[in-house]
Length: 447
Figure: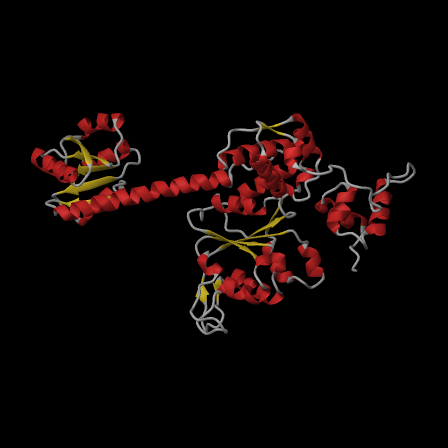
């Protein structure tokens, strides 16, 4: 039941207001001055303070800093626009003049309390979101993750477009949420779109919306996902899957700040912050004319590269412990620990599916485990060493330089291996492979 503190120096009015509130289900406490109200605020918890503006010794608005976030409703018999504006500027949530109608007061009290409840629920939901997506505490202590964190913190307060690169499962959506939650748009929505999950024939309608009758089946007008993100952020995952025509329309959004629904004859202004991600090599797609060069340069204002888990050796066990704690909490299980053999297996396993694969493996183990420790059998990671592969690089000859060895291996195997597979067999990242190609003038073969 809500508790309300009434501060009024006229006893008749104070008592009458307390009786009115108590008849309608509220608990009340009363004071005739700020001095009398101060210890009550220290000793008890209140959901609302109703204070007369004109009190002996100090005005009623002086209770606002003492209330420390509790909503304060100001009332006075000297109603004027000036006093109302001044009270609101000082932090009062609302204003009512005396003599007031009982129904008006009850309506104002309920509206103020409802607003306060919604704010608390919003903060609680935001806390839940931060626990699921720890945007200010992403796990990682390797140099590559520190660089990613630094870029997130630098770019988040701006409205700059962000391009997040990384293999599937490395946490690109988590990074996008980190950018959004640390931006000035954090109170607005972030709309997430997986471009690879929407059929090509529907992607433009989904992104830009459509008017009634725009095509067969368009029985009513529909707002697109870009419009839904107005005022907030739009996260396009796997942007490399967009068709060239959709890329052209997206480019217009970035250049002009407006969209046109499918079948519409006028534009709509939108204000979005665009964050995109892909596991593809967009530079190579541009060279192959499968991605627009002008859009690519618009997107890569700020790049954030998320390393694969196999390149984060020092982070692997820390991340596994974090995920285990989070999963046990989410599944309402008692805290579990990894057995020594499980720790060793986690370090040795290559994690081709990256963080997503690790989280799924740990969640499965927690569900199936009847013990206080998780062993290798519960994790079911399979063999931790790859089978012999004819494309696996042989050790360099003693008379061969590392550059010559690199050149030989790349030239021999690039026709049958992807860039990811080449990098993995060489024991380096895709970024390092690309940089060495540039340094040694080894363009990718077209096959």
